[in-house]
Image 1: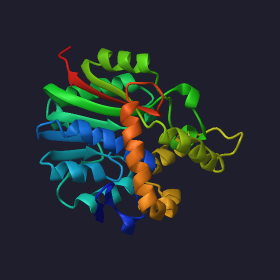
Image 2: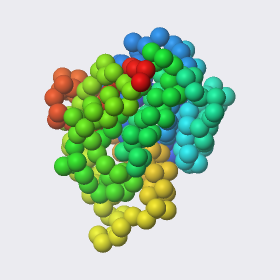
Image 3: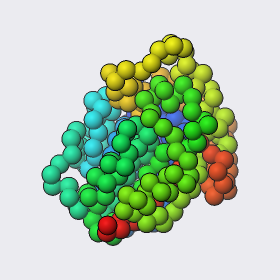
Image 4: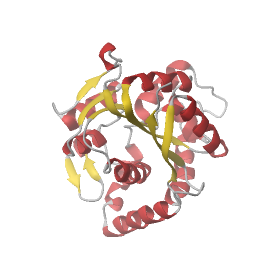
Length: 264
């Protein structure tokens, strides 16, 4: 593993590189997390675990819940013994964590309300949840089918879901504009090639795609040399600025929500 000054951890030896969409999300998430005091943190669906590595370096005591075996292999390699990983929830998690993070996870869960209620129970009184989800059902594409998503979210529906789950929203933004909007159709075209036009995903296929969606980087690895070149770095700097400028508008590909636990 090496640490890129702009992109963070890169795990070439395991075939994992940061995708542009991940980098856009990471940029906004770290801006929010940098305002947190260090504490106990749980990430749901940590994928390759590179954010956990960065947060551990910032003084957070990190644990993770990850059911994907391919993702766990990479995450454990990235974090060595610095993070405790679990494949199933633990009874000791009741009111245990100061922060709970779940990035691009809720859309994979059929009963998202029950999931939020469970996560609420794992957070300490006055603790925080930080989540990201894909935005706008009108943007539904073969990429969502390939990844095993149940839905994309609309702003009002997401606000209602989070507040009904026992949280008070402290920050809500849209991220990814305009770069993610350009990349998404290209990813959808690539994913459509892996799906039969008439095939319906069965449960086994959905589970398999869920396991791989956060760590499969075949296409991204081919383009990573361009991403880390000077033109690529300049493009990402510009993309970071533009998504920050447009974060209060509803133009991008996803939402990020920071909310505080409210006693029900």
